[in-house]
Amino acid sequence: MRVTGLGHAGLFIETAAGSVLCDPWVNPAFFGSWFPFPDNTDLDWAHYGRSADYLYVSHLHRDHFDAENLRRHVRKDLTVLLPAFATDELERELRDLGFTRFLRTRTGVPVERDGLRIMITALTGPGDGPIGDSALSLDDGQTVLLNQNDAHPLDIAAIREFGEVDAYFVQFSGAIWYPMVYQLPLSAKKEFAARKRKGQFDRALRYIDAVQAKHVFPNAGPPCFLDEALFEHNGTGRDGESIFVDQRAFLRELAGARPEVPAHLLLPGTVAEPEDTACKLTHRYTDKEIDHIFRNKRDYLRDFARRQQDVLAAERAARSPELPRDQLLAQLKEWWEPLLARAEHICTGVGGPARLDVGEVPIVIDFPGREVRLWDGERCRYTLSTTGDLVATNIARREVDWSNSLLLSMRFTASRIGPYNEFLYVFFKCLSMERIEYVENYYDASQDDGQDIETGGWRIQRRCPHLSADLGRFGQIDGDVLTCTLHGWRYDLSTGRCLTADGHDIRATPVR
Image (cartoon, rainbow, N blue to C red; front, side, top):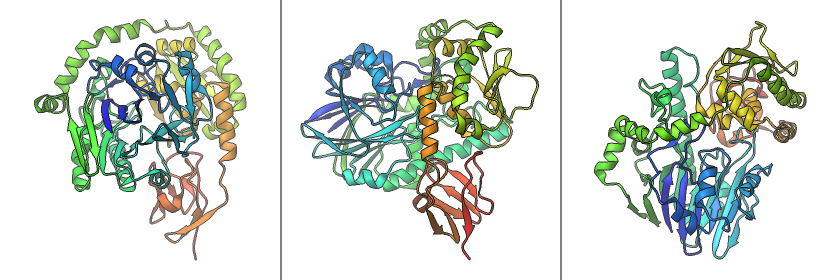
């Protein structure tokens, strides 16, 4: 097996039984905010697109699903490996690009094609990507590969049943807007960013420990930011207020925590050939060039930004003009109020009005009242502020997932009173009736199943209220505080209250 890194989560996997092209992303995403790091624009994308026998797109986030690259460079008669998502949006998007051959998989169920064993583990919770994320396992008879992408939590026991993992491509860097967009004092933002980075590393470490792969490759991140307005978000920021740890920094930290783990630097164009305990690694960069990328990152990114100015200008020119206030309000009311009428769990979970400032126009999404209207001065626990052209563009495109456009762009600011509210962001991910129906039915079906466990002197419900992780495996208790280690969600066992977000309380009683 030969694996060529294509940047970010992109891989080109060659085996005697066929080749698989994974998540080939090169064009900037999220209103021109995200670019792959390091630069992968000079790879021979037409070669990878022509040579692949299979295409695997893990999910619809645009740093994984690059429609322009797929349209221009990937041959349309290959076979698409399709995750078992609850909606068929990914398949529809790929059919619109001209793909016609699909291998539909069942989550966690291996399938064999011409000597290549394939398994896709699909995640389908509201917090998983844009209503879905997935991981890919491959076995060519000699080497077993696990490509995690952004998928977590994963059932590692089931993945290890597929085969002892030789090459593990682990997600290690942040893909979120917190805390960078929040209106906080710098000292608080630095503290929260440090916690977020530690949480990311601890999660990756838990997966590495569980998978027990012979070789580990940090993958699926980080992005870089070439627009001057966002440039200071690169890496960990100028003063440590950002979360985007790079590959070399992660490898250093991993070497300190797990010196026995064979981990390797994968860059665009790097070829890895794992074979048992050995792994041949061939970079297309010299050692001096690699040192320049990471040691002189600001200079490297400034050069990269200069090369991309035309791309950034074209993205700005493609945005829609700001809408007049009355037209803006009318279009949002027409679009969102029918969704609010159906979104019982979401509206109850948000529990109050949220304010959306669009340029100079303050709008309220009144979740209890199921109404979109102008703000009339009432107190709102949650406020998002952005520019009129971005909202107008999302309206014109009928963008059903604003996390996949506006929010991940980080071209907005946010403030809140109290803890994070997952339901608010789920709403912005589900701006179609298809998605609202799915999420509401998901919440109906995923209520606590009544099972309890005893651990650490407490009897608690087995399933984490966040994404139903088994707390018998992933729960850690320190005093009266339970932490679900998959995502770091915390619960006060003495009251049952979730300390991370509203609307996710837990059932717990002390064992006497």
